[in-house]
Image (cartoon, rainbow, N blue to C red; front, side, top):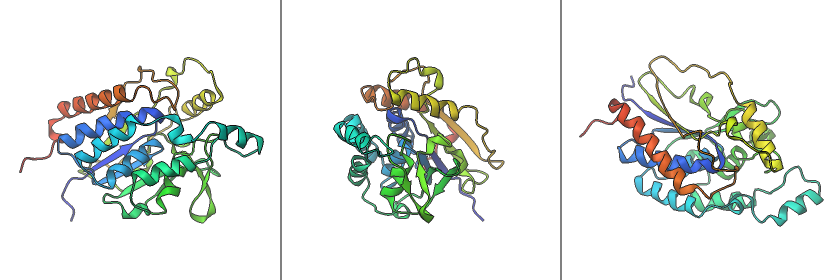
Length: 278
């Protein structure tokens, strides 16, 4: 009979706001909290798999360095490729070549199931529009699918040949992926960097319109209840902070600091969440 309480980290999508999760992870690991299981989608899947390869405070600091050097082209490649993709009538603006190169540089494992900490990655099944969850698979394909914002990056065919796109289309905070994993006594840490629709003050580009549509589509969706006895700690980045478009990385340092602060507040508000000394 299992008696030990596990910590399950759930990492949301959020584009460039994903930097906030680095600060959240920094605070949690500094407090001695390590993930026993990770559930993640979109940019959260990149952060989650990076940590799961080596769950340590040093690894989090390396992730902060990665984010400090991040820019739009890190994910999309050169802008000139957008013109070529439009000219050849491809169903996306950017290939996922740059994203695959980033994944190869971040995570040494080729298979999702080979990470040191179990990770469940969320995607959206393009045919049904419903969340899909992956515990195994070729890691670059699963991660590219989880972050494939429709229209910007290409869908990825996964098991059974089905096409999958960004997890946030169905569920930006992949809580449905916790089902079947969490048991009474477990603690679920939700590292939420979701961008609220009310932050979208202007629509200047097609990307702005796409992100606004997705944000609106996932607002107020019902959340399935977790089993009784599972505690959920929601660590939420300040929705009032406008960090610009989804690929604007000019606020990375501020977002990391904000993430660390809100996680520290959550820990201070619940001393029982800390591991016992010794």
